[in-house]
Image (cartoon, rainbow, N blue to C red; front, side, top):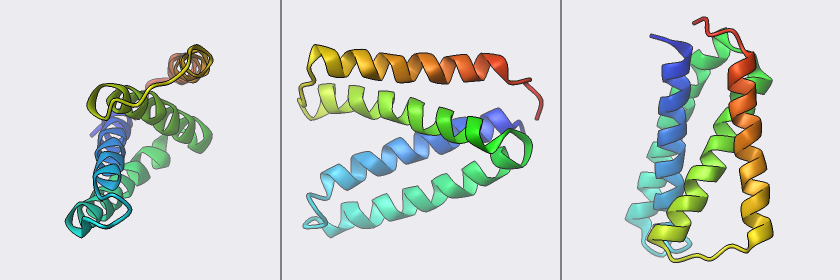
Length: 109
């Protein structure tokens, strides 16, 4: 499978794990916390093969950057968390950086 597929899967799993962590309410709802741990573990299993092919700095920047954007949007729509205009601007810069890195890496793997 493609390194980019593994990276995309890792991002989805990490975002889902973060949602479960939020829903665990500080592990007060332990079943959500356990699910978060499982999803984070699966995330790292997917992230590792991507790092065999793609530069580690690029993988990490895209993984964290896209994850930040995705979880910010989920927080906005699912948890009614509000961000200020400046916060949105900085999140947009993160997304621009992740896209830029994606465009500058050869799409091998």
